Amino acid sequence: MAVLDKIVDGRTDLVFDYVSQGHPATATDKDGVSLIKWCAYYGDVSAIRYLLTHGESAASLEGELNAAAFHGHWRLCQFLIENSANVNQPLDDTGETPLHAALCKATPGHDRVVRVLLANGADPNAKTKVGVPTDAFMGDCRTKGESPLHRAAALGSAESIQLLLDAGAVKDAKDANGDSPLAWASWHLRPDAILRKLCYGPFSIRETRVPMEINLLGEPHI
Image (cartoon, rainbow, N blue to C red; front, side, top):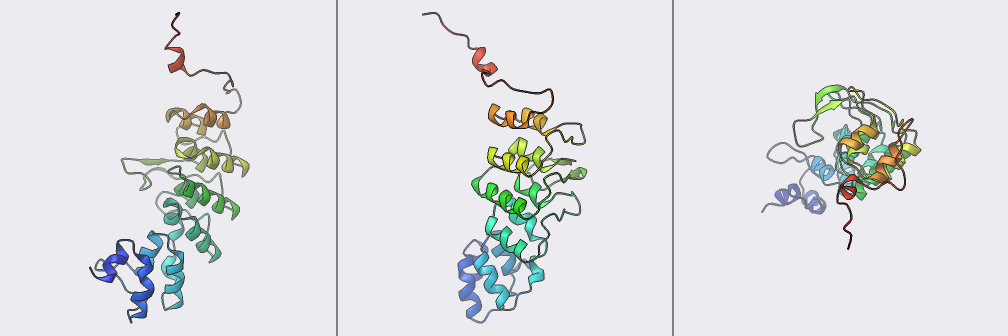
């Protein structure tokens, strides 16, 4: 297998050898995807820095913050922000910001991305456009004018939800359908510990609440 093919398949550590052998830092694969784009896809900041010092343009990373956030690459997010990436830059079609992208799944890496973004001024109350197909999910999904807290309520970790709340996310913000983050969490059957974080106004959950599926079991008299 050619070295370039190995890089495409994840061996971005081979970028150093590939360029030192005389290949340009701006080289592309057979589909026209550049080395630096593959390094960004895999979150390899060291390889990216190497390519930039050997002839690749910083402009080639324009717009990569959203993808880095989506993939959970906190180091790359930090690097891009340090190099003037706009932490609140929305996608032209959907209005999704990097913070929206980071809240499509709950992993330790995505929690770290949320921390990096918020620490650098990400808006916890930015809203997407309404009714636009989104690539953030593998399915027939459209944006709903939701805030990052809406997405976190449905899909994020308790840590990310708390980070958003601490940064000023509005609990009773409504999406295009009039649903709050609490509603999103309810639709997605999130546990009580998360629902409690999102309760507002007249809504509350008792600490002693027993889930309905447990109550419905009853108790045998033995």
